[in-house]
Length: 114
Length: 114
Image (cartoon, rainbow over all chains, first blue to last red; front, top):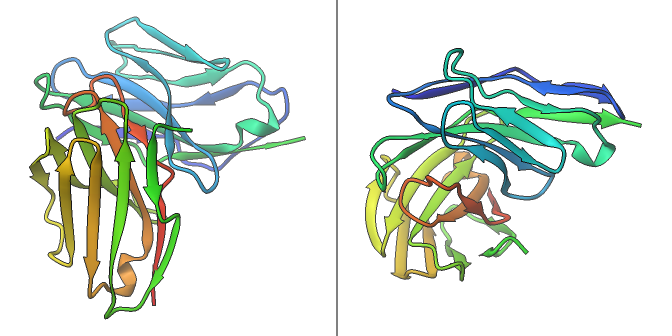
């Protein structure tokens, strides 16, 4: 079956540091890929997505590029802020349109310290 | 405002109680989902409704009973729960079944079974 693997957390960074959270996937066909963010006490929010190879999703300074050759979708941000502290989930959706299965990674907790 | 509203936000119930969780969306989405999020475990898909029809039930115990009276509302009826059912219950919706364009999640109901 499909799977999504994220780097283990927690990740602790100082404010303004560069962020990378690794994500790799296995899936049949060509999945759509997503990053979701979950702030404390809240549900998940869609952060960005990419639907085909070489697409770059971006939002709020975060970026991720769909790399088919390495089956990866790493999340990056050039300069993190304390307000970025949250849990980040990578996810894939694959299968026939209208019948896709969504697979979530286990989440990576990010803590940004001032 | 996420577009998906869940009530209540917090619920404490005894093992012999009956309670219901409510989810509401007015995004015009056609699919709705219940997920369970427990500490240290991946997100667990419980139920999927597409156009008000239950299309997926992932071996969830019968003490959880979903109901989808229309495309905007989703309920999760709970009875005779166990302490291990304590978790964050998340409702989500998507334009079509499978979440090709991503999910919109509610803020969740934090359930504690005592």
